[in-house]
Image 1: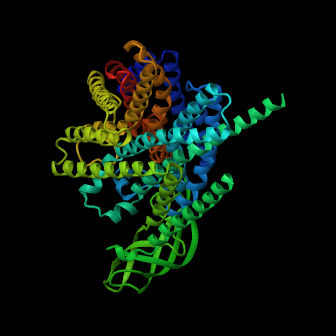
Image 2 (image 1 turned 30 degrees about the vertical axis):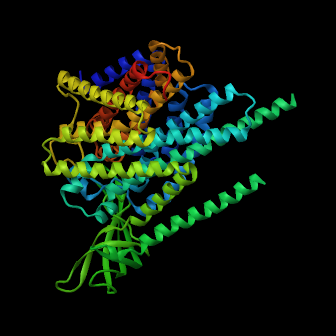
Image 3 (image 1 turned 135 degrees about the vertical axis):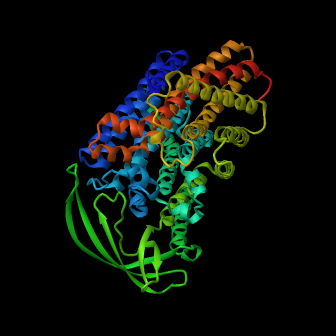
Length: 256
Length: 368
């Protein structure tokens, strides 16, 4: 048995102990997400337009992550709508930034690994960098949207008479609590995954200016800051959708 | 009236944010004097004809050449006009297509006469622009809380850099020890900033530390039992020291944020619960903790999964286009990301158990 299979089994058992049926669903959502991610790469390798393929699979990935979580129907629908809007926002920000910074492809630090590989493969790597940045933000956006939507849904179901204005205030309060820690998840994930790169920079005496303008570092930094922007904008967008729905509900109740 | 006031506020805010972002970018466009490296501004570009080329795997690409005319903007050659040749491919994997107005880092040679080669493109302006957007959004949406968030990131970055310095001075001999100590300090600082000094914070801290330690222990046991079959350390990127301890340290730091995020949520909710209904037994508290954790863990595991996996995309794609099988491309690029995701998942699930248990044991109804 390989290590990946063994670790997967340990995780599955632990998830079943903690979550029962929900544990199995959460585990499956990770497996299916992996399948979709890999399939996305294969489609791009077949020369389908990278950005469009990424956006389509992002919507699927978001829906799996959100609808297979244990959030209530109202909360998960709201979270999904909000995260798709955030996804569009991310795409709008990331495309000009990536073309401006030109961080696509590989840096000098990758030379050793590229040995023996042909890099003239006819796929625009700037677009691949855009795809990478979009994909790496999905989990964080989905998580924030679920957390805020669930919190608001709880409030709505407990106080039916709450006004949409009051709900907006509550949403911002919940959002503030969530963001403080969600930002840590993102940044530690970033620190962890680029630890080797930082040690490399330090070992080779890169100056601050060299690090900031380095292709590999800039690519990672842009991806993480874009995720941060996604997570932060999730707060008002989720809250806005939730209070819009509440307003509509109140209106239809008035008519009756 | 109130609505009008807030509307006005928002417009003013939006204007300020936009101005701030462009100012940041503008400053970076004109900070050439701060760099030691020679910077060159492209004033004019002449594009040559494209040449079609095919590699041994029948990938079709186009090769272009371009002539750049521009001026050196800093250093002792400042103001001198220079002509540089550049070539690029459609895929831009290792090369760039330069356009008018861009700033580039160049290496200047004075023998036999002044000429230069392009090293890289200057990227600080777009990064500053993006940072400015992020920082202003944090302040607009989170108000004062934004200060805590930003200072926590700043403090942790400095600590991280110090740890790397210590690691380097030890020649990478005790990576795991150094980064374990760093992890403890990270948790302490971050949790103090998020929760303040309280019993709740101590409960969270102990849950986080125990869960992380247990995770690493489980990982090492699994690696031992399976003899690390399918873990390709040689595929790790940017490795300058022994890969295995480095990998463990990477995962350790990577999972920390998610574990803290989750433990804070669970402990804070359980403390509120116990306060509202002090008659709840330890077992009841533990069970509600599990209930909360059950719904958070799935999305949280996916956060790290996407961070760890997305960055392997470009290299995996290149492997596939170089005629490698799906299995080989996965093993050499994505398997380590997958391993990290699974280990993080284990950490996240263990945190649910430990933080619920610790909260049940130590949190009493009469304190916050």
